Length: 503
Image (tube, rainbow, N blue to C red):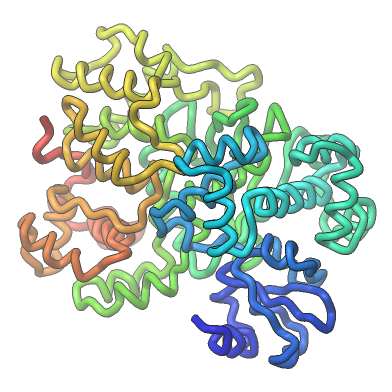
């Protein structure tokens, strides 16, 4: 988009562009979402910025009415696999707060100066400014969602001093922390009851029923559960462990998120990982527009608007579970993963409902007794090889990983074939453009839709779905797994983990 197109989107109050860019108004000194309900400013008074941090760096403060800092994130950073995309995902995960700009530069393999130059050119702000904007949003969340003292909030959000915290909040929001709290319209009893209750924004539509069903069918006992319309799971975070409960929101465009954290410094990272799990930064309109042009995919997109491609909160956990699930049913994979969790996972000090353990780390799984692995000898060797590669860092599945390199290294491991490596790439690394042409579920779904289900035919058809093949894949799987009350597909297995071509 050029600036004239951005201005037309702003004038039409188009919420689809919230998070894609920000509108700064020179006559008022504020920056807004494109959908801000105020009177559209004159064109000559408008400047456009690719990020909230860029607007703040240019001296603009956040609009008090539309709260542009609380928009869904740009889907661009999930799509892009270049250095800037990787860096943006790492910053969102809190790498700068934990290790500084040097740690970020080391993760992506560039010097600090080069990285600063690249980020400034692409998003209008360097890594420190981007991290500062994220700290400010985390602090605002804690101010509004808890009754913690301001000093505790300052350090939990990543500020080095209370003075820096106060100055930043005044600069970004034009209010003191106390003013932000006093004007909060929904101050929950956060810390008094042991949790923080937050709203997670997303771009509608969202097929939440399908998303929760997908996660519920794969929920590992002790680590995850779905009950009373709420998905809950244990979180393994940089400073501590935690738990999250995700449920439908009371307004369109938001989900409820309840978090229990042992260390509040993990708040920003926990929120970001929950967003990645539910794919909340996706642009469903862009996906639907692209896939809807295919006669095979169009009726599926119309039947399930807002389909998401779920990620994961702990990439190493997803990788291990993907290997366990090779050539067995979803239910069997859950059972095996649950047994390993009970034996080798870290118990929670205060279990809640069915959540009792952290999923075992790769280091812990290296010490697993072979007798606890109900699988053939070749797959046991693959299990230990994967655990060793993850524990040593030889395979990187973090938010800043190079997707091509990570997939290639997975394929080097014994027992890891194209299906498993691609599935890990789709969910652990959040790649929106992955397809599994050898998948048995894809074969059955395409045949049921009247299209040849052979590998060659599936691959040729999927080429027309780029760059959203991961979403198309979930639409195909949904054909075989209708929601309760819908017509089931005849004679089609629920398991979609049959590996074709594993070593």
